Image 1 (cartoon, rainbow, N blue to C red):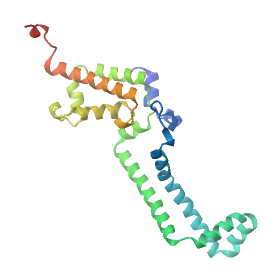
Image 2 (image 1 turned 45 degrees about the horizontal axis):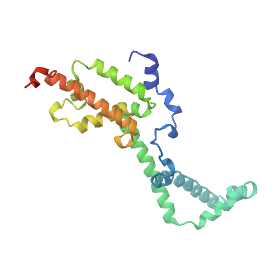
Image 3 (image 1 turned 180 degrees about the horizontal axis):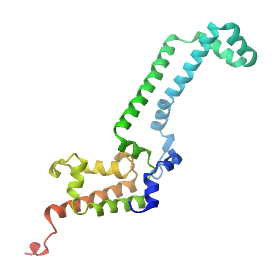
Image 4 (image 1 turned 60 degrees about the vertical axis):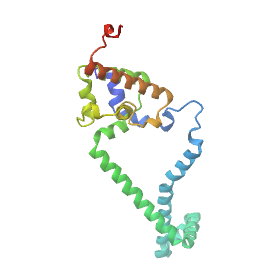
Length: 225
């Protein structure tokens, strides 16, 4: 990338800290976070934090039981509401205790698995950390990629598919690859209408370039009767 500004904007991770969920593109008249699926996702997302809060309360309950003259009396003196909460935890179900412990351990295991996969695939991790591109910047980046690969677009595509012959790579495969590489590693169903249109334009562009390399330009005289 020869443009320092674009390189810093797209490849630097420093700016990604300012990206918020509301910065993600949305369709016109989209329901957003108030849709039923979004509410369900939020409830599932809050399971782990609630489990950890419950585990802390379990720990406080056990400390009050084993150290009644120090911890429990101190809480009754200075933080009475917390002492009452610890007393209420004595009536909690053991099934809920075990479920929260399993949920907390499962969340830690998932995070460790994600971290391991990102270390194995640094490209995927860098794409997920990069800030989202503007449509115009994305088109500029695409033009630069195509300009650098104009001599052999077939090898460019097949190289991303472990040197699979171009005849065995489907249109959907290229569609999915372009979506992953040019649209912040998102899936096709997460793109807006405008982004889907850009994705289709990118695909038609690479198809045209591959067709030129494989078959050459069409001869107008051959179409004459």
